[in-house]
Image (cartoon, rainbow, N blue to C red; front, top):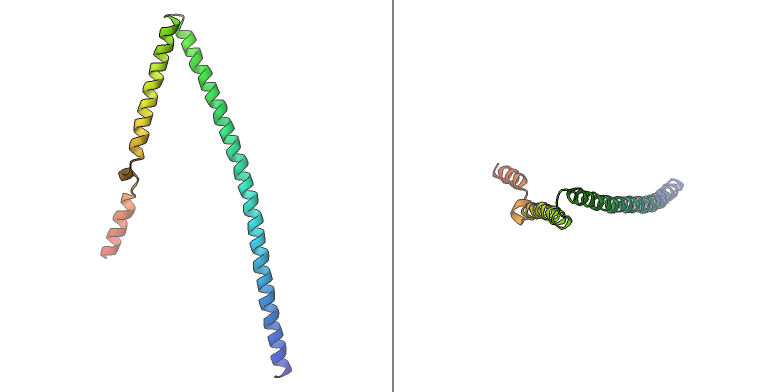
Length: 122
């Protein structure tokens, strides 16, 4: 073995070692960044959930205001029944539409399947 061979081997060994160290450092960086982004997403999710709860409270207060306004022109119990009935009807329509959209046949990616079939026929 010559000096050139041993220095070439040393260079290759050093290169492999440095490359392994670089990969480990990049993985640690990616892990730290992913953890930071997950924390950021969690904080954002908490803010959205809190906002939705506050918005729901506001909606309840507005519904109460509608009942109070209607109670000026009709008995309070009838105003409550009328507003409750309208809200129940809206809820029923939304639930039916949501169930229809969630049926398995509506979730199949038809355009993708057609494109895959047409490309496989070529």
